[in-house]
Length: 356
Image 1 (cartoon, rainbow, N blue to C red):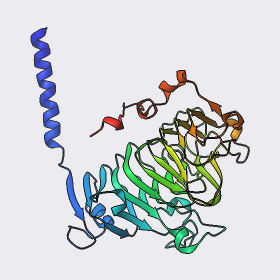
Image 2 (image 1 turned 45 degrees about the horizontal axis):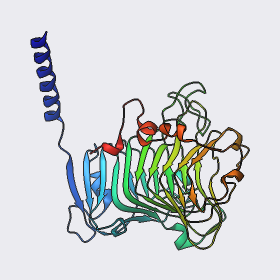
Image 3 (image 1 turned 45 degrees about the vertical axis):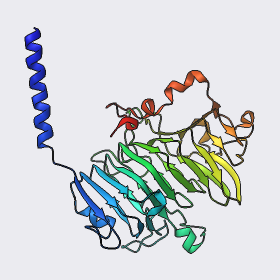
């Protein structure tokens, strides 16, 4: 039996080695606006690898234009000393006319759009400066810096800059029409009893700014040691998570984050429910700006079925006894459920903290 086990182990190692040998090597290219790289635009570099599996190093500079990534295993890496050195920038909004003459809508307004899985971004800035350039409009002012729907996405040391609807942390899995269905819109997707595992995303040491609903969508996301910064507006709602039904496992988890605000912020709130089962949890948040003591805001009667929770809020968090019902305060016994690994492992044991 011992000899058989050794042979079996050796055979397995040989198969793994053969599979690795057959896997295509990752392509690496350099983008430089001054012409010193293989490409002058990020999109040209993305398009050079239609099957993905590419590392795109981006030299410092401001890159004006849209970036759309549909392939899997794409990594964007800024080569500057800090994320501010490498900026991906555009100014579309929900009200901007598209190629067909119709308004783009929020989902198509992103400076960067990512639908591929296993995407990574590090040490750069994604920004939408529509409101800065054009001023605030009553309709169509939603302007997304990043719209991401893929699974197993990782963002480290990335700055997301915008105003309304800055970061669309979304999922293509749970609100899409079932195969063969002509149904569309937010009511579509798996049936009410069918479990849907939303796309998973990990944001580490990021900076996210905006004012109205500026972190929104139905991804299953963790924001770890991030700064959440409210821009001047009469009301700043940090989140608008959109879990649609109980059988969907999406939600936002904020771990050890800091909330800041510029002068001119009126009512600062943790979020409001975009869909019926909106799910957001804040753990050990340091508020360096005064939070409205009620914490959360009603939206269309959805608060009663939403899951909003906090633990260990400090600084200018306000009196948690005044938090609006049914939001809740967690206890230390609850905390093992709210870790990066517990939140994002899924069915494949994904562990973004220890991934290469």
